[in-house]
Amino acid sequence: MNDTFLKACRGEKTDYTPIWMMRQAGRYLPEYQKIRGNVTFLELCKSPDLCVEVTLQPVDLLGMDAAILFSDILVLMEAMGAPLEFHEGRGPIFKEPIRNQAALDALMIPDADEATAFVMETIRLLRRELKVPLIGFAGAPFTCATYLIEGGSSKVFWETKKMMFTEPLLFHRLMDKITESTILYLKAQARAGAQALQLFDSWAGVLAPCDFSNFALPYVQKIFAALQGYEIPLIYFANNGATLLDLSVSSGADVIGLDWRINIGEAIKKVGKRAVQGNLDPFALLLPKDQLRQRIGDLLDGAKNAHGHIFNLGHGIHQFTPPEQAKIAVDAVHELSSR
Ligand code: 1CP
Image (tube, rainbow, N blue to C red; front, top):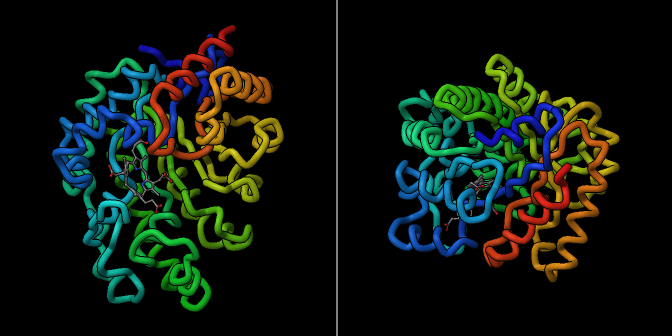
């Protein structure tokens, strides 16, 4: 068992810096495309055998030091009773957005072992196969709420902010329900065998710090507090979150994920005795080999005072990234950080 990733999460000394990449299982890999060619995205998410296969791909092909469960943050929203569709090229759609009390009342707090049995089965199967740690995950409540309220992806978040500012009680009640569901869901993942848990807050960066404090952070704190007993590393990734970093350190996470917009050395000064994860610009994977290695060397150097560093991209790997470039990055991290 290669436990370098878990050691780095705990701030312990490691022989080298571990690496994994957000969205490492996915469309940039031809091996993923091949499987995805025969099934829809949601069918894939609900087929444990196929989920196992695509989860293993980046670990086997590229040498990642951790695996992340293949699933999607919106699977839980569907289990709560919000009918979900994925349209090719357009992303997720909730045809019945949650914008009033009646719609909110219709949402359930599901029993995760039943409603998302396929996720738990995937985790159990993966643990038999994997020689690196398995990361489970969920969306952070604010990010999940934006999809439910907007009815899909958004750029301006009009409906979400309208509810926050004109019907704050309704917004908080929705956040409460997502939070309760997420706690049960992540506890079930931990029981099934997930060895670390990450909350993805992809849209937290659209919030002013005062609104993040009021409308988003308390729910992240509640989730991480509920997971303390499992003694597995908890990771919080707020995309575009540099301006929220001082607040994010109070989330209760053991590891703070960093997007690429902040200098890693500066971030490390703020996070104190916590590990950091990040933060190469995903598009920097396109650099010519020598420059990519140089850039990675600089990043490792910038993180030398970290209380644990897990190398990652600053957000998900882009679907048109050549897999060979990802492999160069993995090898460079291993080689340049070896001590
Ligand atoms: O066509 C396809 O094959 C679907 C593309 C795809 C994939 C591969 C989607 C649709 N989701 C996923 C997998 C996925 N999603 C993983 C897999 C594990 C891994 O990292 O390897 C994870 C962790 C997610 C999480 C997720 N889904 C997030 C949070 C992370 C992030 O990237 O910010 C979000 C926001 C989603 C929603 C989602 N899923 C898929 C799409 C197109 C979207 C919408 C994104 C948007 O609104 O812009």
